[in-house]
Every structure is written in C-alpha cells, then in structure tokens.
Length: 189
Image (cartoon, rainbow, N blue to C red; front, side):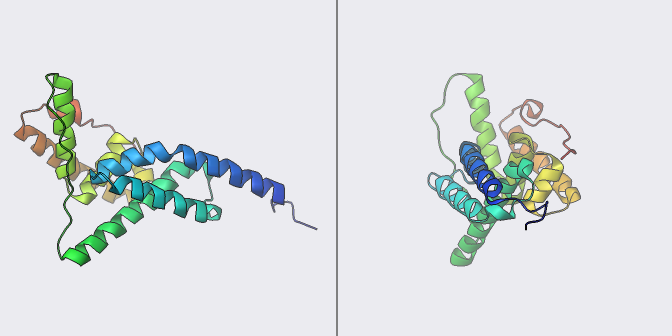
C-alpha cells in the first residue's frame, strides 16, 4: 500500500506532462536571454536547445513548479558559463562577444536601443548576466542569486558595478543613463 504523501503514477505523469508543456513555453524567453548574453548568431539557439534537453532530462529534480523560470535560467547560466570556460581554455584568452550590427535608423528610439545593446554587449560576462537577469528579464535579487549560485550580496554588488560600467559606456555616446538603466530594487523572491 502506498503512503499518503507518495504521488500516484497518474499524478506523476500529469505533473511531467504539465511541466514539459511549461518548459516549451519558456523557449522564447530563454532565447532572448541567451541572445542578450552572447550577441552571437548561433550560440543562443544551441544554448536554449541544450538547456531544454537538460531540463527535460532532470525534470524530477525540480522541487517547486512555481520556480520553473528561475530553474531553467540557472541551467542555462551554468551551460553558458561552462561554454565560456571551454573557449578560454581552447584559446588561452577570454572569449569576446560579437555584436550584431544593425542599420542606423533616424528614430531616436532605435539609436537608443542600438547604443544600449552595444553597451551591454561590451560588459564582461558577469556584468552582462546580472544586468539581463535583473533589469531586462525582471528576476528578483534572490532569484538571480539562485540562478547564478552566488549570495544575494554578490548579486547586489555585481549589479551596482554593472550599472556603473553601463553608465560609463552610455556616457561615451552622450545618452542619458536614467532612461536606460532603471534603479529599481528587487529583493523579493
């Protein structure tokens, strides 16, 4: 006889089916995040595919279904970090992100977006990851800390340094950083 807390086979199958569907729905968000980290033509697709494959393979290790987005992002962050470590070992130097050139448009909005993308791409890996997780993807400090496997204080200090560096880069092209870099606090989980 099974215990009360042990889910039945049907419950486990239902959970698995529900999570597989939810994971597939995260694909576009993961791709945008991967592109913002790498600014490479092929790397985001490979990174997302590997992330989804690992997530589906390790589905039983997800304890809290409400934290699915953070769990997937952490898997992808670990894969991204591992890939850059391998590139560093292969070349003996840090891999530099490739920025995608876009045609200049007359609209101020497109110039702002382009300069901001270039500035984010110029940040080092740690700074680019923390800016995209907290300011662009909207993760809380606690979620970002869990994703990157660092203390919340480290997230806060990296974010402060990343925002400062981003301001410096944007000041070089005479952009008002307050429009681009929101200084909102995200302590909640």
